[in-house]
Length: 468
Image 1 (tube, rainbow, N blue to C red):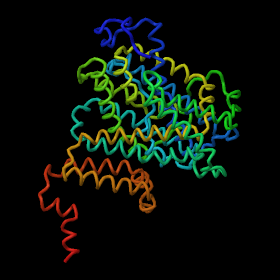
Image 2 (cartoon, rainbow, N blue to C red):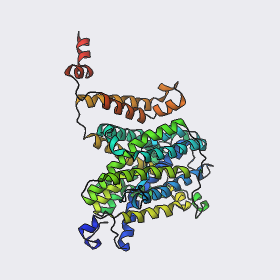
Image 3 (cartoon, helix red, strand yellow):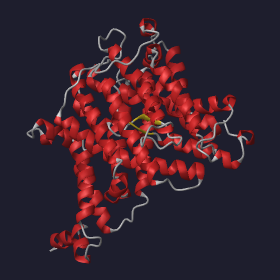
Image 4 (cartoon, rainbow, N blue to C red):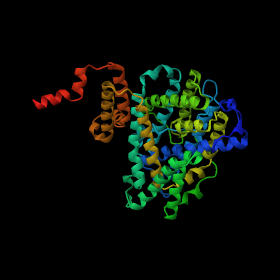
């Protein structure tokens, strides 16, 4: 779908306060929701799976996963309204779509891994405190950006994607190994996942307009159709799901865990910088101007408060969604009211548990095909950010050290088995130690290493010693 000249003149199109006629504003709002819908609910499914919630209709924890999906939709809508409508200093008053963040998944998985519902009170305590901390960053976000150059943010985003690709492969193969499925890794499972991948890539690169923008969700629909034909889809839960339900505060309980609080607060820095980039992308792509300090601060406040409120009701952290930034650039329409309409659809969907139940019927193999593409795109986004780095010896050393330690600890968590639980959970995420090392080294290392230092680091000195 594209925006034609009947929507208004060029000046109106670049005005965030312009409202197109409803007959066009409603489908344009739905277009924004289609672009982010699957990415928004996927983190809830991943966290529920990591906690050990069963994906079958007979699992006692299955209703809790439906509730988490429901909250993902509801609070993505609420957080988006914070951005588009705003209140006081909160909100950029720009067409920014909020959704559940992938960035926090590497932090959340170690916190809940195999612990079931019992792990969730501490998780949501961390979401609440992390959200409030994130909101506070709005007071001085402009002054801390110097500590997070593309070298750091690109490394972090790349590691987020790398840490998640394992989940994508496990889902495509039939779940996680802990499920002990006899069909795990079967040709049938992989065939369904590959249908999703092939259709998604085909539409992304050979289609135009809305077909290209919605490539992931259409690929999932194609895989879903194949899975249904193969008898892999069950609607047993849909009939039992309620027609209407409102969010309940402290649904999973509430407690404060030091590991959760530290992890979410540290990741808030990364999420805040991501939001700054998205705000800049919206204003440049839609209005041809730089974002103001007020807009950047307002967007950061909305990010944080949206996350904090979600945590109270059992929702996961929210952040701005980059795919919708691209959609604004494609349509050329800057109207925040169009995004408000889309947010209202998300809120309504979040009040209907049957929507979550329908989403839960997606076979995990189908979801696996989709997230392989999505997580790969996260890695690609990180690599793209790293392309802005001046790859001198200094920056190569920083990147190599941070990546080696962070990824190594993630791949071999038992290497730190004797650390206290809090430190072990934070360190074995891989993401936090990598980010911390990159930030510290970037701040303390001199901008230029001497020739002798770079030769020694690159192995020249060691090579001469070995030759002798």
